[in-house]
Image (tube, rainbow, N blue to C red; front, side, top):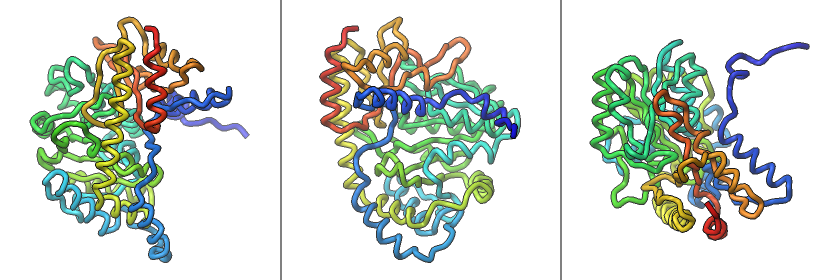
Length: 393
């Protein structure tokens, strides 16, 4: 039997984080146990409050049947309550929230609800690959905009002109930012939301790292700039180390949510209700989040001190769980990441070039950086820090 994969599949380049996993497997195949800073998958246990709720829910939901396409009422209410506590905003759980299988599902599928073939979608570079991949699978054209250290990794108004916004159906932003750890102020988010509304461009904000910050004040949400024309995506994956549970939600403009919900009923059958019960418990507990934040801060400080001792620029992040390390002039991200894979070091990172797209006049904004995901244990971070200090650059 002869068959061919679709053009969309055959034309896909390698997914950055799958490539990182492949590098890890290569090292292990050679008998080397690397310290893996490559993929942002927390290694701390899911908090007990969520695990216990899941166990109970497996029994209480024994006859639950299919879950709601858009989330159980009690989950949507818990998400709305958390948003009020966290951001001081009121979101209607019945009309302005829908559950998701983590943030990736929202990111990848959202363009299918809004993008027609040929429509442009503005995506950050460097940034999360599914912003562009989801756009392309929807038949749209992903147009990368640069995030540079000179601009504080914030969208540059000189690039994101009104003309570009008018041409675009959607603008993706991500603050707290992966990979840079930058935080956008409410003034910045409000200015972006106002400009998007004026140009009929839907603003979609990926806020998967909303609860991981190291600044004096917690980062704001784009929804604080008003719900009209704005959607925000949230996840329990990083906040509560629930990557395996695949649970989150999307919230914002009711009209946009109506389109997204219509899509969702045709895509899947909803997040398992017992998983939503675990998420409700996690959203009601802030103690574990504070403990996670402090642990990420310790890891950040260990690695950043070692990197500066090795002669690299200080790139201490304000938020998220990554270090976006700038490299010496003339050294490529793949070259540096490869040096760290030396068996004497065996530290896995993600080359910044893999997270960026070429932009005319800007090159690849991810080049000249590597990303460290602060997910290994404190002990492994200490070992890695000592190895990094001995680097000769």
